[in-house]
Image (cartoon, rainbow, N blue to C red; front, side):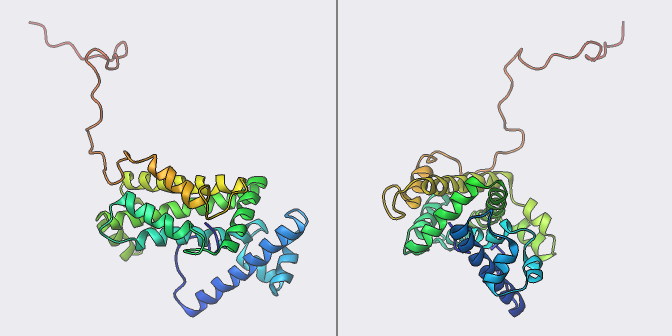
Length: 260
């Protein structure tokens, strides 16, 4: 699930596209050095030199050397979210998720087999370095938010999100997604993330029965009874059984009625 930025907003202007390209060049240089000489032995200055930039330019893009691989993590997450968005509109959510998995996680469809070896390397790196693991977790969290908005669009629950975004209220736009859809996005994201992480710890081929796509599809199949598109209505939770409600605290019960 990797190949390229921190969260999912695509660059629009020429300046933004150039910055995104520079970030990606730095990320690729960092990944190569982490693999060839190790994370601990690699300095930010080494990454800058390999990317053909000055150290001060490096620090304009990334605060630490570990953060430099964030664009590689985020590109895969972006690809997954885009694949869900691009799934045929008539598909219900579970089928759209499976469709997206086949597109984004199958070598040759979304990412080349060679790129999947980089995926494995970078996921393993996150497993051995707390600092890199935090970068990976941050990217996954951003992707989860983006997926929630995609699901809101697919299920017709997008009006509040669109209105908030149109008025530049990004926080409101995020909060406007119903909690049920945010939970669905978290569940779907976990199904894919765990599949990729489990595959990365093993030696199975990316396109085989134990590859990331196959594992993710099995995870999603295990959720066949999950209510992907429903939002619980307020006040419709389970009613307490008679006699099992909370007891009033001493001195805080109902006031006695007036004496006759």
